[in-house]
Structures are given as C-alpha cells and as structure tokens.
Length: 70
Image 1 (cartoon, rainbow, N blue to C red):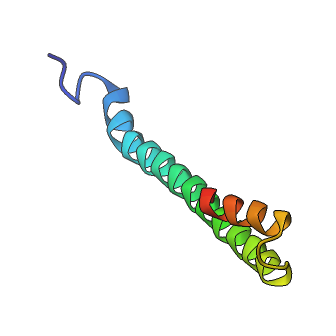
Image 2: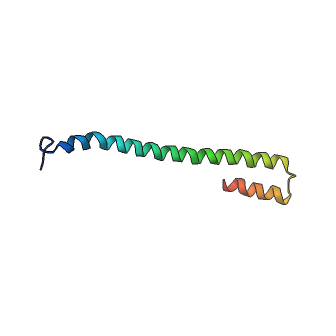
Image 3: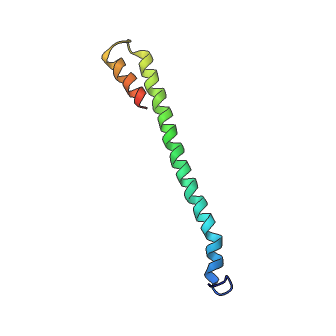
C-alpha cells in the first residue's frame, strides 16, 4: 500500500474530499429547504383563497382538496 509520502495527490485528495462532501450536503439541504418554503407559501395562498370563497361551493371543495394534498 502506498503511503502519503509516495503520492503527492494523496494529501490533496485528503484535503479536498471533505470539502466536496460538505458542499454537496449543503446543496441538498438548500434544495430541500426551498421545496419546504414553496409548500408553505402555497399553503398560505390556498388558505387565503378558502377564506374568500363561500363554504360548500365547488371552488371551496377544490381548494380544500388542494390544501390536503399540500
């Protein structure tokens, strides 16, 4: 097995690999956070529409169904 002294790229790999892994995890977390934020925004919009529509109407039922899916 080669040691760190035999291969100059081994040290570079040991330094860069954690940085790449950390960056990838951060990108995944940001993507998840954006999806959750979009869900919250959509929930607020649909809830506001439900408040303005007459209860029991077709539009009201459609919004309630949409809210349940969100």
